[in-house]
Image (cartoon, rainbow, N blue to C red; front, side, top):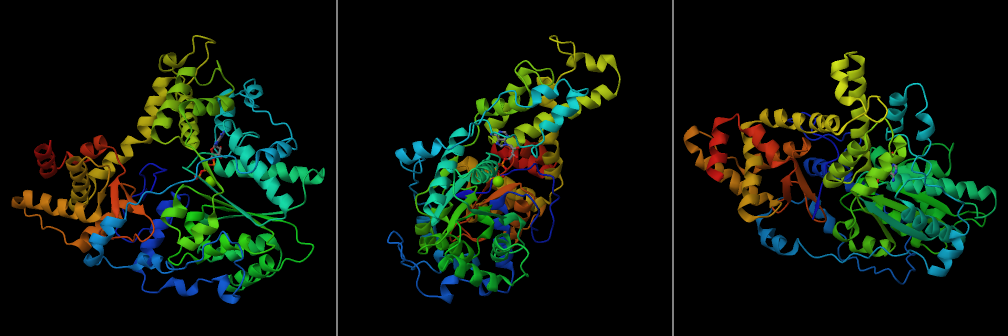
Length: 547
Ligand SMILES: Nc1ncnc2c1ncn2[C@@H]1O[C@H](COP(=O)(O)OP(=O)(O)OP(=O)(O)O)[C@@H](O)[C@H]1O
Ligand SMILES: [Mg+2]
């Protein structure tokens, strides 16, 4: 099961309306929201998907490709109603075990050794340019700037292995002339995009010295497209900048032509598709084309597909796409506490630096590694710590500043205590009042998930089970006149809570919003949930009965 990861604190007010696509929300979440929109919409947007195979019949010459297209319609389940007849079958088939390819070297050892000799020397420095900056007049401001996620260092610490994998793979693919694809996955903030960009930058710098053949590079991002079909236009414009704009259908045909019959002077084309999950449509045509193009004979295309979910191909993609993805996969694991400490340290120029205490860095690293392993989050917390310290300094009150003066150099620094208060501010306070302001049925729905999870010892629950629990809770407090909800109302509640990031909902092949078997789970800690609900006497009573 793929449950949507949470990337941000719960700052969005719950809206009664349909969830809107917002910038930089978790990609799988957005995918799910799009599915919801498709479900709610009466038009079938699939009519506007363009399958380049329809324009020409041949092309799948790769023997490795299994082209049994028996699951062509499998994704139509996105639009299915919650037909009770399917429940039992779905319940039995939903959780199949997926065998994932292990992370191993992507190309042969001999080739790898040869290609790595081409790689210019890269220095991962633990002090990086930040060390020099500490001599600046305002080290706090400088380090705060360096901690900003938009500041990407020249060499990413703790990503050497992944850099080398991508580098060797791409050099090999460019030397071959194209016809390759790689699927990169990993949870948010693990350096996927940054690593690929660094590899591309390195490769581009090597074209000029002749150490690797020329190639073209195009990058698109699912998050930035208004519609998955716009991917065709974005790729076309990237390949042929300055050409007149064309429709998505036309762009798809033109690209098909480029990849099917490249002219003799066509150089390899590296296409990075970031946030691939967002290009999913019910028939998955855009993603099919992306993975099919490199498989066409003499295709110059080298596809780098990036997504958050490792098993997206197995769980979500149709069989024919999955077979085209192949086994060239690279996983970016979540950063460990040690990794995060190194990443933060490399930016602030420590060990022993003046701005963040070593203890504070260790604390942030451990905390974030325990939550998500997301470098963005770790850097943000440190940056907020510095901002808090700056606010304290600005008050010009020696007694307020005293706890933050370092014994080492007598200068103010960010302590663990300050970081703790930053974390408290960043995370909890927004959630608790957010929960207290929900409607009674929204609160009951959250409570129903908790009740089911406690009863069964699982970490998530099928939508249908939550509805049953919800009704049972209403019956328990029946004397207070709560009308039990029907399934339709529960679907609405789930969507609203999902839009507010209070719950996570399963996204996967054949799973649609409001599907009775769709799995959901709380995206708030039980502690925050209890705090948010306890002001309501009825709910407090319910929670007491449960304990
Ligand atoms: N190893 C690292 N060293 C230093 N900074 C890093 C490292 N990894 C990530 N970062 C920082 O985190 C930011 C996010 O990284 P990146 O965009 O590559 O993550 P991602 O895995 O692509 O996440 P998402 O799935 O959300 O797109 C980068 O801009 C960079 O500032
Ligand atoms: Mg990314």
